[in-house]
Image (cartoon, rainbow, N blue to C red; front, top):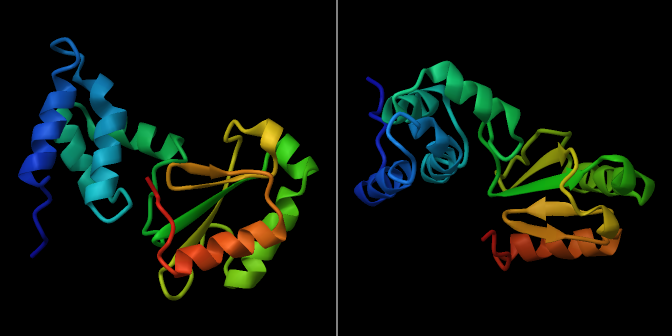
Length: 169
């Protein structure tokens, strides 16, 4: 028997408040903020039954939710660690050493791109442009950017995460 998927009452109230921002028949406009709520509430990732539930709430087809959720890198399609390290790997970051940063993280955490450490603490997620080209190389951790990265800065971030000292926003 599968578990019923439903937002907590306070989250569902927030979903209805978000939907109410848009004109009748335009509830699909609420999709991105509702997906963010769903990902936060249902374990940090969007399983198919969760996406189906969101589609039902918004009175849209499930495929419309899948298309959006799989397009944006901010949504996770499989379980992730407590800390998702999104390292930019586009032009300016690459020129400034993001591949060196990625290699260091891969080695230090013993994971490949898209993998999660055995303890469930970290997931490495290379990302396309995160919009901080002037501060390259950079990574996003939760809602925060960490810029002008060096190996030492990365090690400090990882240590702070292990100590529970990192705010994900």
